[in-house]
Image 1 (cartoon, rainbow, N blue to C red):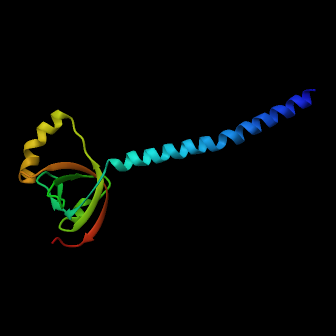
Image 2: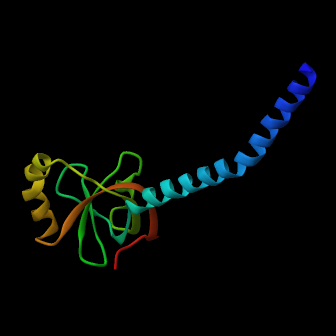
Image 3: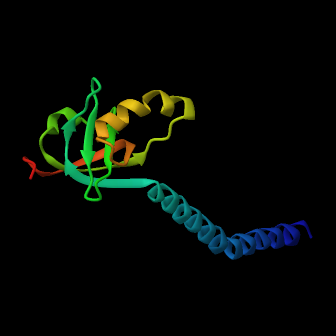
Length: 132
């Protein structure tokens, strides 16, 4: 009697895993897709001439749309590419209102009155070793 019950339990567990396995795999894949979508949604790529900024250690790039981006990166060596045409990819940096107000005047000066933003650079691809 105990052997029949044990065998029945083993079959029930097997059936449960087989029937729920695909559903859990589908859910995991869907969650990974959603995460990838959210991660790429915040990504921004800008191609232009990398220039030295006014601030120490600061760099800027002007995109095709005329928007000036102040670039920040701890892992990409931006200084090595000053004067090159590059494509930088990263996420728009967000600052608190107080931080933004503190540096707003300098950013407007650096951007020459054009639209501007901050970009945390995660990768850089050199397009040309000179600027047009």
